[in-house]
Image 1 (cartoon, rainbow, N blue to C red):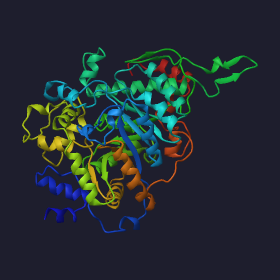
Image 2 (tube, one colour; image 1 turned 120 degrees about the horizontal axis):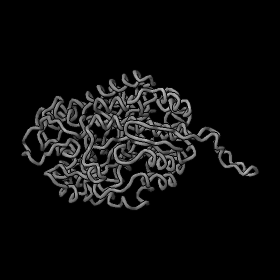
Image 3 (cartoon, rainbow, N blue to C red; image 1 turned 90 degrees about the horizontal axis):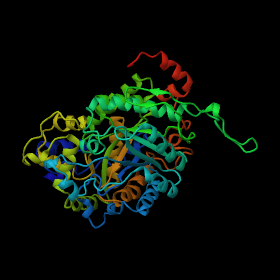
Image 4 (tube, rainbow, N blue to C red; image 1 turned 60 degrees about the vertical axis):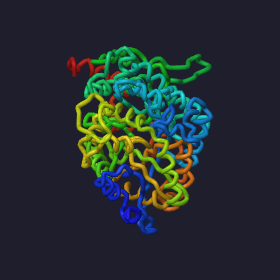
Length: 507
């Protein structure tokens, strides 16, 4: 009877049915649909990003022990270059490299299980992967995560521009404010700023970045005049004169303008302040939505905020977190998924859940219910698991997050998975999917070998890249941030300084 239900219900209904039965396997499958149903409709283009991290296992704790997993070779450039070539063959928009400063020590009050299970520790610097990935590919975008909480914007602006130069304009910056107390303590801050204050700092951080990368060096400042012995025209390079609440940066930007000036801006804010920040600044937004209804509400809300901020909502792409387990047939895909589940670490999953929420789930029994507790970590995570339409137990939470983190897991044949991807895009308005892995590179190879050709056959996925920088490939416009973006306010730096002289103190 159970298998018959699975073959009738579409994904979101099936997941809800299994939720009401209090089953531990409520996230594992997609439905069989009437053949050709999606192909008869006007196909919207679906976009893929690969979600990875310069560490072991990323968001599938325990899967590092699977014999096919190679995440433990994260230290080797060969791993990253080979993966990048696979993703480019699959016409992925980019590889999105997550990062954390600190470690997950909320679970049971220590970092013991995080270290034992390699739950994002050890972890290496993401930005150093940009150049080797760029050398191995021609088109793939490279999204680098860096926090506004732990590095001064003057220093970071140079690192960011350097990466944009080295990749010929294929870099993006995932702007995070950080959520681990351990990171703040280890850089001498004593502890994290309050959640909303972190976004206040981030706004000013971006202001400094825009001034350095957009305004300090004018177009044409670098002349390379050999006969006149003038490399740069000093009259076209300006001090930014920034004096704000959190940062004082009086001088010049250190780098000449890179291909994009400011690289493509990514953001994953899902709380109220986070969504306002994303609506004001981000060009690509990542969300982790456990259900289609949550995703639809988020997409509608964030697009309204983008329009209210005076920007074009169609020029901001939204990607939702997802893991795909697939093979030639549904039976093979399900067998693969069941095999992966045997390697999931219960403690490792709760290490992440505790770190993301700020709640120590190790103090509860597996059958206890998750309750809402105010923390200084990721507010949207707490809202989704404690304020949604399902009552979660601790054990269910661990099993849900055991593969791919907080996003759904789709298991099925290429036809089944493609049907469900198109349904989510059509029903929610999301632009694409930020694909996590169970094992790497195998999960990504399966998507490229099975899912991409099926979507291309339906006309629902690109077959080639657009020319130019990452921004040009994504949006088809110029290499720089558009005129309706806040960065445009800082391109005439002398005018900016004149306005700031007249600005009331503390504004």
